[in-house]
Every structure is written in structure tokens, then in C-alpha cells.
Length: 403
Image 1 (cartoon, rainbow, N blue to C red):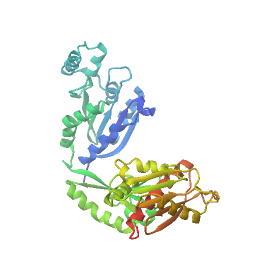
Image 2: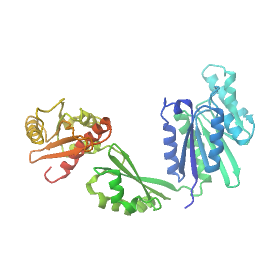
Image 3: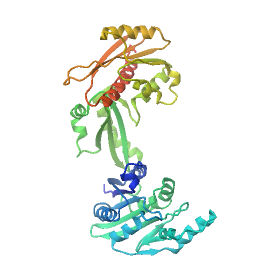
Image 4: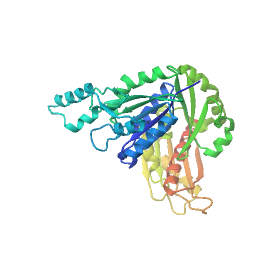
């Protein structure tokens, strides 16, 4: 199935310097995927004329559709109009209707338009304006004829509210007209897992992870959480679901309860839902995870009614051993009115090769379970992984018949 290839260009010193997060590109990518356009490139460029010209020239050689955000203001560092015109080898012209609109916006505020804002009504020759009903920065719509076929460039302001309105009113309808797939879509299905490393998972799913298969399955890791993302293309949601069904079933059969969700979420959200659904309460005592277990659990909205008690200690006991942890966990459970108690032990340093060891105890009325885990990497990463591991122990404990 043919599809348009898109590149998204985000423009601004505030982005390249790290002062601001680029959420516009994320949103645009989501919108393009929903209408069957495949985004292959994200480019971020500073407010530098030569760099902007180069980025435009490169983008139109490799993408059918180029979407930019930012750089359409009236100041000296707003270079999108000038750089696009230079990249295309054309001059700028003034659109009087857009100039009148900008003047009218200032008049509504009781002000006269500053002369420098007139530059916002300038466009590369061959372009047409993308009207901005609410702001002084109209967008640009330019078609480029190339030997490889027609290309299209849309330049939009960086203000999210204005960008989204212009997208829905003008840009998306125009893309749908040029899209060979019509109203087809690219849909992603997510499987969240915990308890297996990235390399082990790839070995467990060798045929699933192959890049040349359809649908494709991508794998990413973040603090020991592995996300599988199945990508499908179809004319309807139902068609995409049908394409993904066998792949999802195969993954479920291979991974079992390593899977904790089929949507974007953190593992503590699932545990919070388990506690709520079973009308159970939890007490937590932790040492080695420095309070991160309690922090993660309390990050979930409305979990308060499911938490009976949270306590942090610098050390649980002198002469710490797993047996002492088990007895301490039972005593802790008996002293609180909770259905489940979790006790995370001290970090037990070991050889550099083996990595530190930490124990997690889960106690209910019927059973006490002790698990041990070793962690490597930077200490901050180890603590984050250990906290997730403790929460996952509780998830699995509640899934078991004895839980």
C-alpha cells in the first residue's frame, strides 16, 4: 500500500537549547498517522538562516510532505519565510488580505500594528497563506514540483492552539486530498511488559521482532519496562485490529503475565486498579528503594483509599538477612489493617560483577512471599528499577491463587 512520507521540522533556539520541550511534533505525528501518512523524519533546527535553508533543501529531497512549526513571528530571529524562499530560489511577496487581517487583530486590541508585523504577511512566491483566525502568524502552503513527484510544504506557527486550529481547518483536509490512501490510517497497538530484559525478549520473540514482517513490531526499554508497539496500516480501525490480532495473540502466548497492560501506562497504575477492583488496602515499608515505591504508588490519582500506611526507614534492622526480613514483614503486616503488606529490604552490596541485591517481601493473610533481585547500572537507575520490581511483585502476588 503506497503512502506519503512526511518530515516534521521544529524551529527555534528554545528547542535546540533544551529550554522547551517539542510537543508540537509529537502531536503532528499522531495526526499524520491517523490519516495514513508515515512520518520518517523529525528535525529540530535553531534560529539560524543557513541551517534553516539547508534543512528545507534536504527535507524536500526525501519527503513528500514537510510540516514545520515555529519561526513565523515578526522578530529578527523568525526566519521561516526567508529561509523557505531561499531554499526554493524565489522571492517573497506581500499578501494584502493577510496584512489587513493582522491590522484588524491589532485594532481589536486597541493598538496600531507595529511596522515590523507587516513581515508576517509575506510569503514565498508560489505559496498561498494558511489563514490563522486567532493570531498574527499565518501559515504557508507551498507545492514543489520535483522529478520524483509533487511535494508539499506547510509552515505553521509554534503556538499550539493556533497550530491545531489551522491544522483541522486547512492542513489536514489538504493532505487528505493528496494522500494516495485517502482516509486510510496508521494505527499502533501497545503491549507493556515488565520482568524480562530487552535481549531476552527479542530471543523469545525472534520472528515477531523482524523488521521485514507485517505488521511491524518495535521494542523499546525504559527503566526495565519493555514496550512492544505493533504498527498496522488500513482503511478502518477494524481492519487494523484484524491485522494486529494474530501478532498480539502470539505475543500473549509467549510472554504470559510478563504483560501488564495493552495501553500506555505505568505498572503502578495497574496495581492501583487491582487494589481498587478487589477493594483491598496496602501497607508499605521500604528501605533500599528510598521511598520510591510509595512515591510511585501515590502518583496514581485516587489511590489514597487503597493505601493504609507508607513508611520509610534508612535501615530495617541490624544484621539484616532475608529471614529477618520475613519476620519483620509479618510483624509489620500484623500491626496494620491492610490486606497486603510490602516490605522492601536494605540494599545488600556484593561483588561489582554481581551487583547489589535487594529483597522484597509480600504478606497477606494466607501467604508470605520473599523475592530477591540483583541490579546493575547507575545507582539512580538501580533504585528506579528496584521500585518497579517491588510493585511488580505485588501485581503478580495479587494475580496468583494464594494472593
